[in-house]
Structures are given as C-alpha cells and as structure tokens.
Length: 73
Image 1 (tube, helix red, strand yellow):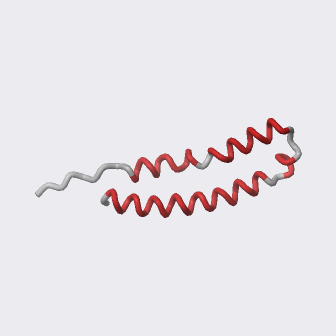
Image 2 (tube, rainbow, N blue to C red):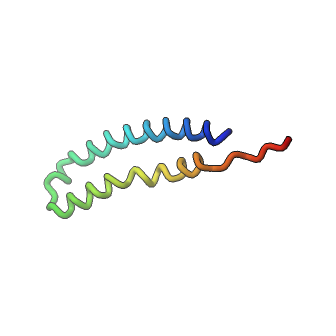
Image 3 (cartoon, rainbow, N blue to C red):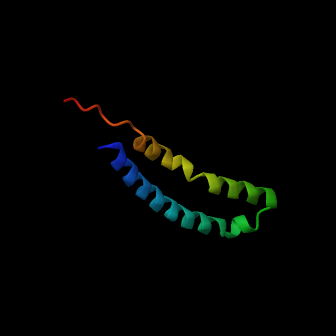
C-alpha cells in the first residue's frame, strides 16, 4: 500500500479514535471519585486524560509514515 493511501486511512482512523476517546475521557472526568478528589489529584488526572490518547496512536502514526516500497521496473 502506498504512503498516500496509508495516510488517508490513518487520518480517518485517528479521527474516529479521538472522537471515541474524547467521549470516554469526558465520562471518566465526570466520575464522582474524580470530582470530589483534591485539586492536585484532579489536575494530575486531567493531564493524564489529556495526553493518554497519544500512546495508542503511535503505532498507527509509525505505520502511516513507513516509506513506500521500492518499485523495480
């Protein structure tokens, strides 16, 4: 598969993943245990929720950026 196709598919997958993750993060952020936690704990949870979406997408980004195979001919 060419890089251009991988980027198109990857962009769609990333968009879908971020939309689902955002809903899950909002639900987690509204949990009673987090809302009643002390301020520093809340800040740490929100920071983790705000950055945690990157880790699952790293393999997808690496796949998208893989160079095209050499074409002989």
